[in-house]
Length: 200
Ligand code: GRF
Image 1 (cartoon, helix red, strand yellow):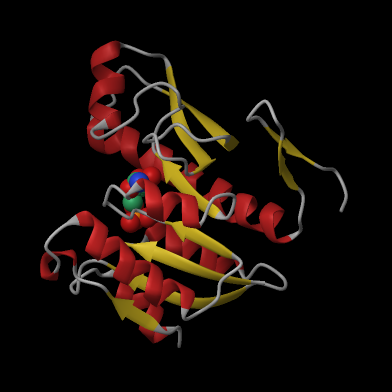
Image 2 (tube, rainbow, N blue to C red):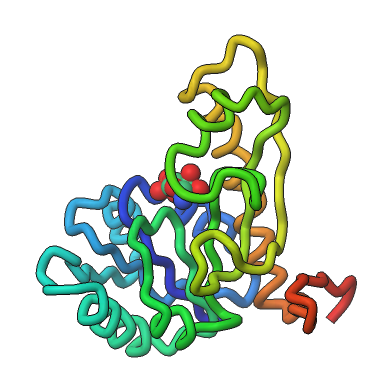
C-alpha cells in the first residue's frame, strides 16, 4: 500500500512513521504547505519524493485544497496521513479522502480540540492527557477515533514537558494506526465508531 504524508513543520510524526518501516507500506511522497518545513529535509535525505504546495500562493482555501488534492492524487495513495499539517481543510477536500485520511491530535479527544492543547490541559487541571489518531471528517478534530494514548500530568509539568511526554506517545500510536489501516483491520461502523479486527 502507498501512503502520502502531509507536514507543515518539524515532521517528527512523519519521521516516526517512516522509521517504523511498516511491512508493505511505501511512502510515496511527503508534501508540505511550507517550503521551509524541516520535515522535508528528513524526507529528502531518505530518498522520499517531496512536494511543496505553498498555501501563500493561493487566493483561498478552495484553490489551495484543489491543488493539494491534485498533487496528492498524482501519487495515487491508499492512505493520506496528516502529520502536523497545520491547515484547516475544506469539506470538499475531506470528503474526497473520506475513510482514508488520518490525523493525529495532541489531546485525548473529544477533550481539547483545536490549538494549544497542552496549555489548556494544564489550565484545566486534568490529571491525564494524551494523543488521538482519528479519521478526518469535516468537523475539526471530531472524526472516528482509531487509537489513543494516555500520559499522566505531573505537578511540575509545564507546556514543554507535557508536550514532550505526549509526543513520545504520538510516535508510538501513529505508526500503529497506519499499520492497522494497511492491514485492512480498521472498520468504521454505522455508529461512527472504529473497530480494530484481530486478524485480517
Ligand atoms: C504534533 O504534536 C501533532 O499532534 C500536532 O502537531 C504536532 C506536530 O509535530 N498536530 P511533528 O511535526 O509531527 O513533529
